[in-house]
Each structure stands twice: as structure tokens, then as C-alpha cells.
Amino acid sequence: MTVAWVKSLTFDCADALVVARFWAAALGGELDDGATADKAFVEAPGWGGPNLWFQRVPEPKTAKNRLHFDLRAPDGDVPAEVARLTALGATVVAPGELTVMEDPEGNVFCVEQ
Image (cartoon, rainbow, N blue to C red):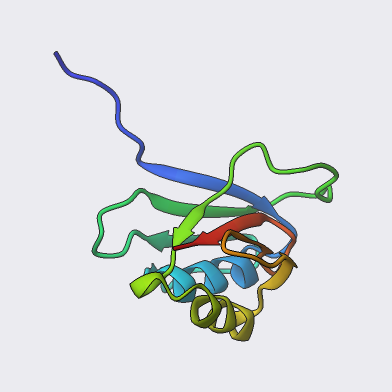
């Protein structure tokens, strides 16, 4: 039986290029050469996950994400991964063994061991 598979995850954002650059750097993906503030595509890194698509929308984010990433820190070193992601433009919302963070446009994600 043939089943559907996840080709990409789509993010609505105010500036697609800013958010796509962050996630490409955070996950080790490749940012498409044709990326703009209106639309950007990040090819999945070697771990084979779905591609990421970013599109500009006119309305601002007004509520909590209904879906978010849980990232596993390399070697279980949460503080080092949080520091790396902060340097890329993320902010810490709630520190801890499961650290809650936001990307440059406020999309929530977590970093864990």
C-alpha cells in the first residue's frame, strides 16, 4: 500500500529569509539560492527530515504554536546547544533540562538531552 509522506513543513512569517536562515544554520540544512523575504526553502539536512518552507504572510503571529520542534542537543549538552542557537538569533523563554526557546520571529521550540 502506498502512503503519503511529509515533504515539507511550512512556516508563516513576516520575513521568510530571516527565519529560513536561522533554521538552516540551526539544523544544518541548505538555504535555497533563490530565497527572498517573501519565500524561502531549506533543504533537509543529512538526517533526512522533511524540507522546510517559509512564506511571508501579512498577519502577525497572535497565539502559541500548535506544532513545534523538539531538538536533541548533540552529546546531551543542552547549555552548549542553547548558547549556539542564541548566537544564531534564538531567545530563551524557559531554561532547564528541557529549554524552551523562540526563533527570531517567536516560533517556539525546545532543546533537550
